[in-house]
Length: 396
Image 1 (cartoon, one colour):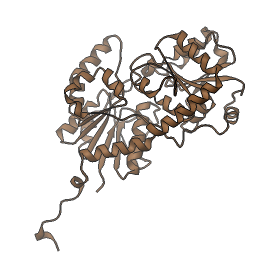
Image 2 (spheres, helix red, strand yellow):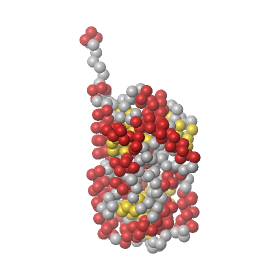
Image 3 (cartoon, rainbow, N blue to C red):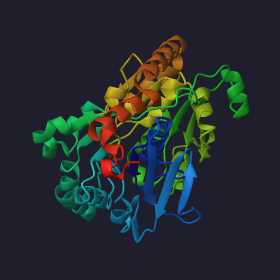
Image 4 (cartoon, rainbow, N blue to C red):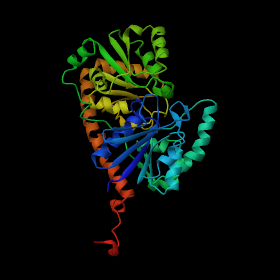
């Protein structure tokens, strides 16, 4: 009998956020290994309540209230009664119901802890209150709490509540499809298709441009472009309610003529933007950035990266080996790193080749799927899934 597993996530494709995409790729790998996988997520207008996606059964439940990416889903508790294991993608305000359901129904719970939630004003106090109560219960009731890197785990503001249960803490990185994100066979051809002149230097930033992702450092990227030669094109891939703000910023800085906003791009087109770039930039400003999925996507395409030296991110990028790390918020340092990368083709190529090799070894979804399957098997032995034999009196 196949293991029946529920992945619970506040967001899920077609919403283009990192957490939902990680959930999707985890589930795809598990399906390939014969696991009966269900995703429990928030409903949204225009989307079916239930559908099949690459062998995954997706359940979209009614939402009573939503704050940003935090949907209140009262039906969560009831929807999780009949599974062998529950895997919660967290933080997810309201997702604590999944932990309560797991506890009540005696189902093993695995939590992937994606990043700290950092809010301002009164919401900061609300978040802390929830973290110290429902959040504490959720993490401490889990059989495993998985961080994307060991570095981020130690720096996270939830780590102190797990210090006495270190045997339950582990690492499961985010990954990349190394067969889709690949180096370009011909960069001039990719640029021709994207209408980018071959002689231009291109720095790309990929991010959701919404308030939930305010920490991506888009303003800092735009400021860093100032002072660079007019042949340097900044490309911002993504969309959201802050896009017009960033466009206004580019105009105010006098660089609107060399900043391109692509809007939302398809999953099929995304690798081309990395392939067309000389460098990918992730200038995030807070620990809201725990990993940086765009970094491994870019490195898989052979394009070097510049990223903020933040916990977690600094473990993904090896400084001066697969990319460059700069101090968060230091515009001049970011600008200098960009200039150095643009001016040194041989250096870029060395970093790009090393990055591709590093990602193939450490961050392919296949290797991550192997680790996840092994973890599940340790928590739910397959013999526990086999039907009990009939008593002798009932056999024929």
